[in-house]
Image 1 (cartoon, rainbow over the protein chains, first blue to last red):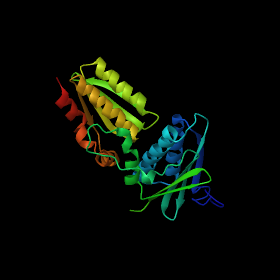
Image 2 (cartoon, chains in turn blue, orange):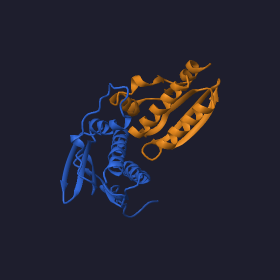
Image 3 (cartoon, one colour):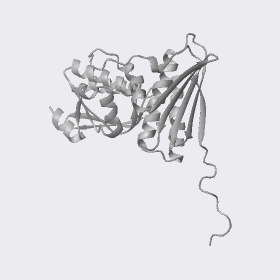
Image 4 (cartoon, rainbow over the protein chains, first blue to last red):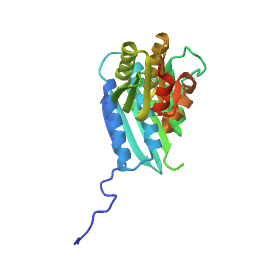
Length: 149
Length: 112
């Protein structure tokens, strides 16, 4: 027979998570693991987890592949949080200034197009909101996905 | 990412499981090319069980598709549903591939 106090169901359920990764493509696995774990704990719909994982893969891949002018070690911060019924992902890097919102839309009709050029096009379509700021040598991209449709 | 490979009616079938992203797509694409070069050039790739696909995954599929065509073989996709299907449409990739509803449909169409 159960007696005594019970733990409230929300206890210990953090509303944000953060990871710091190296500028190495293999590190993206750790970002996806964090997103999957956070999404499972908060029971995000499949569509939201899909959008977050694809978008963060595109953004972090872009930063690691094209963001740095030296071959040195850099840190990228990825934070995912619940805020007012939205899921918010923030990516910060100290690479060269790059505003993904200003990137041209790919030509989807060209047969010879570079399939990699479509990544940011995916992000713009999958997320509900994107904001870019640059300050103190840091690119900061904020992506928002609404939980309720 | 995990690949399960089989042969049905002389058609190679690859079922992909997990993430098709920046970290896994290179090995995925290399494996598809190697299967296309080793077999009779007919390959069905089942995407039903992938968690998601990013542009890196599409790049691998496009390269494999071109390799198949170059060898007068055929690459067919199946299990393209839900959010994955939506990305095919957003990226304008739907018309670039032979897409069938199920593995059996793809095998039936590619069978020599």
